[in-house]
Length: 113
Image: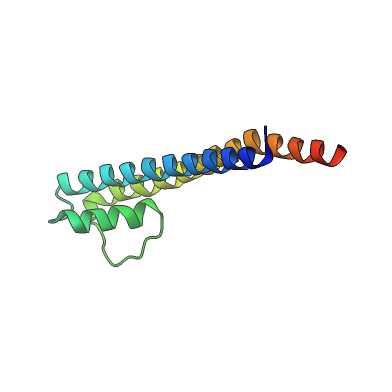
């Protein structure tokens, strides 16, 4: 495979992997927002979405807090976010491990010839 095509393939695979992860995280945040809104934790969806994004990313500004009865629900959103970001990191590392050995092998072959 030509070096330019190989680099293009690598960039496209990594971009597709990252895009897939972004879409998956976004869908999960929307589900959490719908859950918070549907449970009556917040009166409007915008606040629910903001809270679920901040909680899912474990940023936790603290400017919006849940009632004591719903706090366990919020902690599950944070745990889910923490675990899925960990899985996303493992996915990207696994993707790099599968892609980069080909790149390094191509570089070694070019240096030999």
